[in-house]
Length: 379
Image (tube, rainbow, N blue to C red):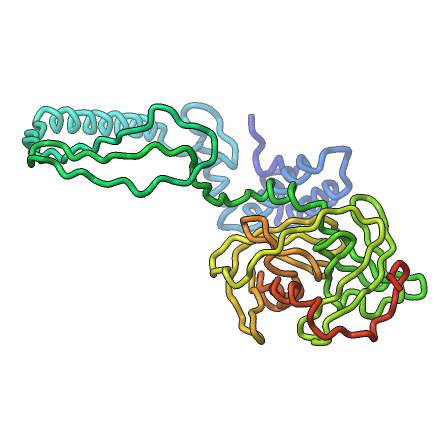
């Protein structure tokens, strides 16, 4: 049996308003003390106490509540808080009857609609004129040896309109290779041994970090701003550290290219591509050491070509970060097309690489001799 509001506040039915207020305050204080109950139980009891006080402290609500106590529900005694305890129980019968009526109506409508439905007659099949059959004459056997590709086959016209045309194909022994775009996995597997971390030290303390790409035996290309302020340069590749020296750099600061000599480095050189063949939308990959995380591969597309001098900066969506300077930018054929150099801090994936043509031209351009020589630099 549920408690009445008077029992919840522990007061008599004829208690005064002041007695009800005092009992409410005592009940709230007891709940605040905890009394060894769980937090959830305490919150529930406090909620009932507040509800009881809200009704009994208001004379109008208390009067209505006292009347309801003298009129118990017909089925079972109902306590305060059950919104359906004083309602007519026949509402359940109306709900069940209405649900049954709706189901009957839906089923009846479906049956009547299906009985009246007739499938539409099928349209007659259209008469399609028969196209001439192309007969391809294949070679009996294909030799694996390389030989010149046969001339373009001639098409023999049919003698009559209702006879099939024939195409005579001369035997050929080779298939012309088609360039296949590399997957990200294949490209990383092919070139991960050719990209390194470049570390710059000054007075024995590391002051800068970037990336580098092997372009010749024991030769690594990077951005000059990675090594310009260092008095010692080292290379970290394949879990080994190498002493490196600055051979030379381009006198044009906008090209930002320096070549390092790394004695003992056995990493393979990457193939140099052609950035002038790049088109907007071409898939590219950046491989370097952003934030010092070596051999980090990111993928994107060429989003623009920004003309500068006789070439163009390559704008890409491939993500790069500080530390990516001097890293490799490969096209989907696996060729080096640029060197990741800088990005826009206020943009999203607005990054740039210098073109590979500047790397090819570096040995024949004016070289700067003011760069600090590091250990391992050939004298």
